Amino acid sequence: MSAPLETQLLINNKLVPASDGGQFELFSPHTGEVVAKVAEATREDVDTAVAAALAAFPSWSSLSPAERGKPLKKMAELVVSEKGSLAQLDALAMGRPVSTYFDSNYAATHFNYFAEAAYPQGHTSLNTPGFLNMSLRQPFGVVAIIIPWNAPLVFFSKKVAPAVAAGNCVVVKSSEKAPLSPWKVSLWIEKCGFPPGVINVLSGHGNVAGAALSEHMKVRALSFTGSTRTGRAIQIASAKSNLKKVVFELGGKSPALVFEDADIERAAKETENSINWNSGQTCMANSRIYVQESIKDKFLEAFTRFAKTRRLGDPTNPDVNHGPQADKTQLETVKRYIALGKDEAGTTIDTGSSSEKNDSKSLLVSPVIFANVPEDSRLTKEEVFGPVVVINTFIDEAEAIAKANDTEFGLYAALYTKDLERAVRVGKKLESGMVGINCTSPTGCWDLPFGGWKGSGTGRESLLDSMEHYLEVKSLYVRAPGIGGIV
Ligand code: NAD
Image (cartoon, rainbow, N blue to C red):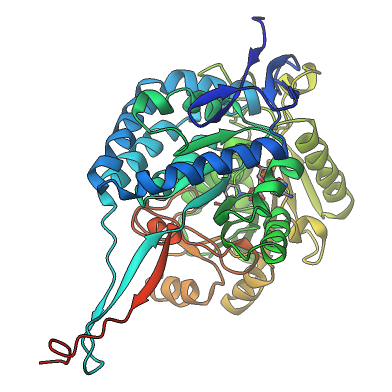
């Protein structure tokens, strides 16, 4: 094994250690070895980064949109040409299989799109006699961006690109579980041509750097993707400090409904992929599947068959499509829910493979299927974030909708049926930000709003929607007796 990487913070285009020299060790979830010593940002580092962003804001925001777009385009090129090394870093840090790495293409599309999309406009109004009125849309100043670990570059790009394109300067905090790919990207920021202070990248834990950003008086907007629990803490910190604008993409407990007229093979294959992709560590994974009673056995057989084809192992091996859980904490959480399920479920199918059982160091968990689980159990209500699915049944449409909606989350719901009228009728009743009809997550599209209802979030992100989050609105009332009026 090679020597551990040593990462730094990027503040004002300088790579620096933490102000107190602090570091934390990052362990490979596959080998258990230390893969990096990561700089642990302090409150002082947060203050320095916010000050750098604040100082950069006047000149950055006064550039033309095309000028601000140039470095974004260079970043788009780099994330694609460096796809292999970025994929390796996430595999090392949190066990994401390199075979599943679509993140570079996603990021390049977002950097490229926002490089050309920053032409926000307000309204004009002639409806007040004697006035020519208008609304302006202007950047906030300093925006904080806090991202999770399950797809770091996806969240980095979908938030940083629109924020800086709109004229803001940002301080990004990566996740303590996956700081390596954001750190790698930070090495390219000056080379791309971003002036000092426009993009600052910190690594560290939530309770220090994340909390300091959430309560910072000079941060005017904060975009967060992560758990509902942390979202709530950030909301409180915002309210207690300067009421900064917060945008949340949070957790899920997404249902999939499979009606008896559905293509059962397709439904089983896609729902299995949804819950087990990234080892179940996906916000919109369909972790609750409701199958019409008459097709229960057929569906369960097909689902189990697909789950047993997962190729568990070393995430850096291109033949593997199911890596370990991200770290020991994740593993312990998943194991706790599995133990709970074994107590409560009517049926347990553990697809456990020998590779998992023989390898004591890797944090691998093979898919576990629980059927006939009480609707009020914790396993049915809480987000597990692991390869653990609940498969329950329903008798009719009304029961299916009621069960799907009986949750505090509302990120992504799916339904499978050949009856188009039913599909739309049910789709309209599902309390969810996204609904897949004859498809399930991660299927979506990058130009429609991505986000959740209820406890799954407050924001909607997409190529067309995200810039809204990073612009303030101002109404300008201009007394103009000579030219005001509607004619
Ligand atoms: P998390 O909430 O534990 O951490 C997310 C980020 O918040 C990390 O950078 C962490 O350091 C930081 N953080 C932790 N405590 C903080 C605090 N008190 N103040 C400020 N920042 C703090 O989530 P996670 O474990 O990294 O990610 C998994 C969660 O994210 C799951 O719930 C998943 O559903 C959700 N998620 C949602 C989406 C979406 O788009 N809706 C996408 C991916 C992940």
